[in-house]
Amino acid sequence: MAHEEAAKSGAGLKLVIRNIGVLLSGDLQGPILDADTLVVEDGKIAAIGREKDVDTEGATRVIDANGTVLAPGLIDSHVHPVAGDWTPRQNQIGWIDSCLHGGVTTMISAGEVHMPGRPKDVVGVKAMAITAQRGFAALRPSGVKVLAGAPVIEHGMVEEDFRSLAEAGVRLLGEVGLGSVKDGPTARQMVAWARKHGIQSTIHTGGPSIPGSSLIDKDVVLAADADVIGHINGGHTALPDAQIRSLCEESPRALEIVHNGNERAALFTLRTAKESRQLHRVILGTDAPAGSGVQPLGIIRVIAALSSIGEIPAEVAFCLATGNTARMRNLDCGLIEVGRAADFVFMDGAQHSAGKTLLESVRLGDLPGIGMVVIDGEVKGERSRNTPPATRVPKILK
Image (cartoon, rainbow, N blue to C red; front, top):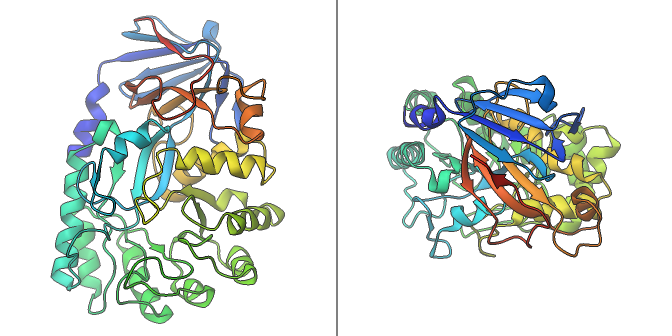
């Protein structure tokens, strides 16, 4: 209910965004749209096109994009939230707000594993998951949508536990392998129960990341058949190339590349997915907060790295953190399509970048300058305090 109320915060409002320089769709099949104007009504995209062809009358707010690039808000597929905008992992306050300034509008929990004294009995596991789900449904730090309440499965859980979690509103499982369940057959049974009741799962991949976790190799990953192969490039320690290739070729599930992982393995995964025409399965996350801290610019850093070193067009790299993730995660954001949530990030080339355009600068490895972030049709942040300064920024006219 709280999420529904938050989503209606733009009710009765009409936003018109004009003078868009480049409109990125988030869709691999057509990453750049032939349009310069967006119309948003009640927090949803209502029209896309040339200004002369869309209805801009009656706007309650007008934004002049000033020739900048507009993209869907970035989605971080792998975070570890705990309580509001505080993380006990690094004892840092305001980390989600900082990520908003990195263009992130949606975060997906891979488990609230850093909760001090995290319960591991079945009753405690369920209670903590429901508490996290309720808390982040009622609170959007700085407007960011945090999809949380992701229990880490433990021995002793039965199908009834997953049914009751789903009935309580839990839609995610934390990383399989971070709890006591580490073998393929047991994980597969619990993942199947979760899937039956509408709960999506992620599995830890690679070497241990925190005390209590263990190596999860490709045989366990394939046996468990979780919906998302979490940090396939390791969190931080990656599997051997041959095992990564097996996961790309033998599993149909999402291939999640994270910032807090092995960079060479990330590029190997990208190349393997591209060669096998499986790029639509690649999604991006940060795996933060973690031992290496919080990375407010983590998603755009991965985008720039994959484009520049992985040699894919920048507009394609942005799809991995938007439309790909939206489709793999069944979200209503991440794509510039009529009816989708109006979550946007406005970007331009950083001042003095060698690239002449935003897309060229990212292709050269430079981070974009972020000028504004919009969530559900409402401005949540203007010029970023974390990115390099953008050459141009949008202007609120009304």
